Length: 163
Image (cartoon, rainbow, N blue to C red):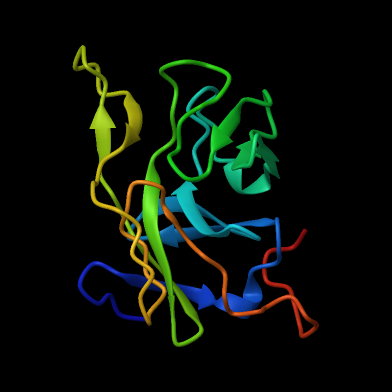
């Protein structure tokens, strides 16, 4: 698959099960992809607290209407829209752009914002702008999601991430 203007095709939209994560290698970066009722989300697969690449195996949920992911190791909860940790101030996971175009989920990597003291720790996602719902259902905004309007989930074949 080829990259188009920073967007890398990852999988068919129908391969993503509702509220279940899947890991993908995008340009050498492990990314965790999620499809929820709120849309598509892409974050780093690396848990910033433990350093383990496990977030795709986390528990999808919500807190006060915010789509969330709980780490499978220490259970810190992250806002899927921003990557911010809701339980540990200052902790965050990098959020990436995600869109569905012609039934294919594509990811655009964002550079992490570095820790203010320059120690290289990632504290969040770079990128600015707002969510744009377009014909391509793309996301390049600060909340990292695109509404799920494809109606996937009403039957069909699933699989691809072992679960």
